[in-house]
Length: 112
Length: 113
Image (cartoon, rainbow over all chains, first blue to last red; front, side, top):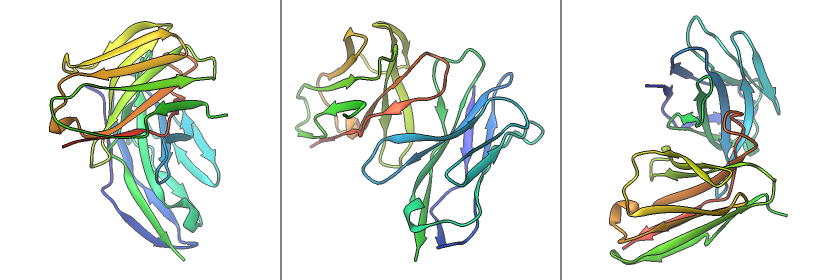
């Protein structure tokens, strides 16, 4: 079945460091890919998405590129802030999907 | 105005009890979901409703019964609570079944003692 694998956390960075959170997927067909973010005590929010190969999703300084050849959708940010501390979830939806399949989440901790 | 609201936010109860969690969305969305997040943050879908019709029931025990009185509400009733039911339950809504853009509530933390 469809699945998403994310790097284990926590990822601990200093403010202004470069961020990469790895995400790879297994799916039939050509899924849509998503990154969601969960701030402490809150529900998940959609951060960015990409619906086809080579698409780049971006929002709030975060980017991720849909790489079909490596079945990956890594999340990057050039300069993290303390306020980016949260849990980040990679997710996929297969064509005609009725649900999202989420990865296990990666906690990011940014210190001043 | 909160887009997706859940009540209660916290629920502590004894094993064997029955409890309900309510969810309401004011976004005009057709589709609503219940997700369960365990202590390791793993998020798994339980149910999905589209226009009050059940479309996903993801091998959830019969003790869990969702109910959608209208498309703005999706409630979750749990009978005979077990220790393993302790988790955070998230309600979510989306404009359709395959947009991928889910709007989540703040979660309801259920603790079974």
